[in-house]
Length: 351
Image 1 (cartoon, rainbow, N blue to C red):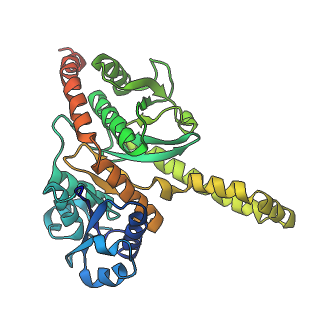
Image 2 (image 1 turned 30 degrees about the vertical axis):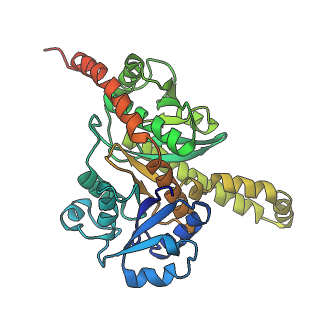
Image 3 (image 1 turned 60 degrees about the horizontal axis):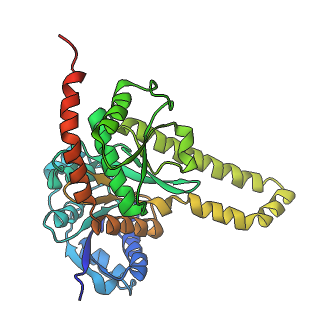
């Protein structure tokens, strides 16, 4: 009998927990038979919900705690007071080796702080990065950093590229991901120094990565690049801008099709195409950001998602936890280290 894989779940994190958490596990369990779940949270609240999840129920083990992380809790406060919460315990199960990954829809800042504190960074990684999946014309791409930190120097951008390529292989199934740095132009002289130096370092390191240079923001949606690398400030701004534009387009389409009888008739005629478009752009189908660069897999689900979105976050955890992501990243970081060390003195200002 194969060894079953266990995913650790924060049952109390998110705007609609614990209901959508259990419903999400039920949806994931229906098509993924090889996984069991450690569900951390209030047993009295979880048990009635699990009874309504017949597929997942036999594979769920409840780890009771009556403590949880509030959605507005400060990360520094949780570092002092978070021990024993459902979020802390979910991450702790990854550290102990009991689970292959943890998933939470809870407070992002607290989850990042606790994950770093409990799991620590992988040797060779200066800063962790938050990676997410974006819909494109040809499928999906990965983008990082989306806000784990606000800045990144050249070496850190290359570390992000290494981790992003491994993520794209593990989660998106892309065998040879095309990687590019987000910039204001594709020319070699465009962008600030850390971006230009990051590109030079990528090429000098001779990594087994298909590096394509720079990509401009308006080219992201074409789908010609599988991994887009940037600093956390730029990535977070880009993410929120894209989300806002997507909502605006959706609202404008609804208003247009409700503007009169002819418009409503037109909406009926194009309904199949609209449903296909909505499915492709549905954020639930790309839900699940991963904190890369830690000694363990932690997946952040959107706090306001429903059961469909949470099930996808669990899918991301399953893909990451069952891959050779760590081995690939560590091997490429070893290749990068001597090159980055040689470049670093040249970056110091002359005395």
